[in-house]
Image 1 (cartoon, rainbow, N blue to C red):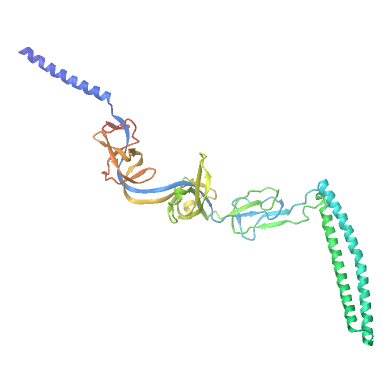
Image 2 (image 1 turned 180 degrees about the horizontal axis):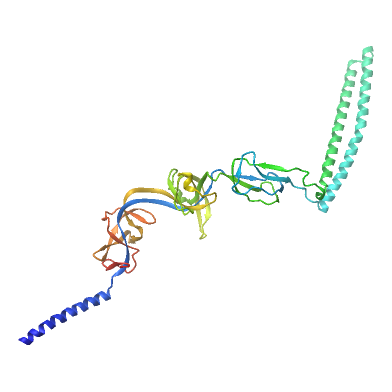
Amino acid sequence: MAGKHRIGPFIIAGLVLLALAGAAFVALRNPAVPVDLGMVARRPMQVTIDDEAEARAHDLYVVSAPINGRLLRVDLEPGDRLIAGKTVVARLMPANPDFLNARTGGEARARVRSLEAMAAATAARIPQAIAERDLAQRNLARDEALLKRGFLPQADLDRARMARDHADALVLEVRRAADAARYDLAAARAALTDPATIDPGKGGVFTLLSPVSGRVLRIPQKSEAVVAAGTPLVEIGDPSKLELVTDLLSADAVRIKPGFAATLEQWGGNHPIHARVRLVEPYGFTKISALGVEEQRVNVVLDFAGPATERQGLGHGYRGVVRIVTWSAPDVLTVPASALFRDGNDWALFVTQEGRARLTHVKIGKVNADLAELLTPLRPGLMVVLHPGDRVADGVRINRRGN
């Protein structure tokens, strides 16, 4: 009997060790899956449409060359203040004529000779016309004397007067024709002027004054150069009066209305800038994306809503990311969007329960980049698995990554 009593404790201890070994084997065979966890919570939420935006002067003026000519060096610098109608923004000298090649030069010389002959012929007609006028005047005087003595009818006197008036008009016509011939000859001779002999300053300097008060934003052409009419010379605007413009996909633009709130971020400052939508342009345009895909885009224009001190340092052409709020609510039951996945036709997520993942189907409402609105009434504070991988399934043991 004493021997049996001594064997009993050993058997019990062996069974305990065997059970512990089995539990350790099972634990080592099916270890807990490390996961990241998030929380179901009530919090403010908003949905935004995000895209790149560019700040630009609300009223931009481009001063262009009104004539072909030589632009003198522009003395202004970007940022200089301008006064409307007083500050000189550019000076131009009229362009010299081009050199003539052999063909056009020969044609121009032949035209000069032709016009010289025409001018001489026209000038020769002047004495003839004057002589005819003097004759008509003498004939009229004789006919008037004869009429007074009763030897000439009135009709003959009227014809004499008409002949005198016709002769006067002919003299005037011939003289005007001679003037026109001289002018044409002078124009033809001017076309033969050698450009190398023209004094550059003889044509004067054409001065352009600033059309508005503001500041110089950009000077596309600063150095002296020959420019064509219409060439942009100076861009003028008021940097304190800026607006934002962003081109959005047309499918996003239809969701935006004037008055929607927005913020400009990642513009270089350490705080967002508040803005508000002023205009959604009614005309769309095609734009090629970075991936080479044709996209239909629409310009959306926004006005800054905060004080000017909020956007100090921002200038014309500066870029940032604009976030236009299309929906917001102050208190919404939310879940991290990264916890959701599709299970068939339903949305689902894994909640944590006693160290295990439990598959739960949910209904969701609004979604943004970080959060989703939960329409299924889950308990606030409930922990959910973020980015569940293939190893996470219903009932699988899990532990928080890093623990």
